[in-house]
Amino acid sequence: MDFNQWVFIERFINTALPVILVSGLIVFTIGALLLGPRYKERRRWGIGMMVISAVGLAAAASFMFTPSTRHYMKEFSYVTPRVRVERPSFFGYTPESERIVGAYSVVQNDQDMKQLTMYSRQPVRETVRLVGYADGSYYFYVGQNVTPVNYSGPVTKKQVTAPYLTGYRYTLNDRRYRQIGFITPDRYSTLALVVPTNWKAKTPSNDVLENAKRLVRLGTKWTTEETTN
Image (cartoon, rainbow, N blue to C red; front, side):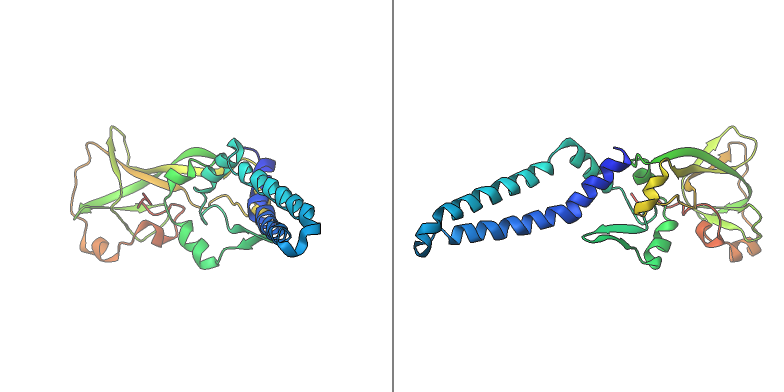
């Protein structure tokens, strides 16, 4: 589905469809009233209005079952405030609250993100410095941060020379989507910590244990390691 199809279907569902439904019901009701005994001379008008409204309502309803609309509805179900800071409404688009956008910006929702065809997906990795393992968590330093990370997410062991975080960067492949509130997420989706198979686990120092923070609390470019599914 391209940008123009997305916008057309979205505006139809949020603006045109409510207008058609309300107008159709009003016209149908008026037509039904004209069939009463007090309006014998206007029964043709009543029948005509009922037929026209019924056809219009049926056409609007049938549009909701077309392949394009069903595809839009399916893809729309994967959209979150992490990638869209404005939501569709009757009069256009309404901004999401900064609090909601901020909360979703750190969420690892890769299972949803990869369903959105307006985004391209590129693998990324960043080397970390492991300093220990304790109580189900790995401890390491990432980037230029002097505060250690307490990581309890997915871990993969491989024949690698150095440990690293792995994930995906998502980028809008059609900038026109920015017009309707979509953005390129600032953070990478964190999928796993890759640890060398020959790494010998050791207990971190007390200084590390006492000062370690979760990945997203350090202002890194990675999301939380916790999944939404």
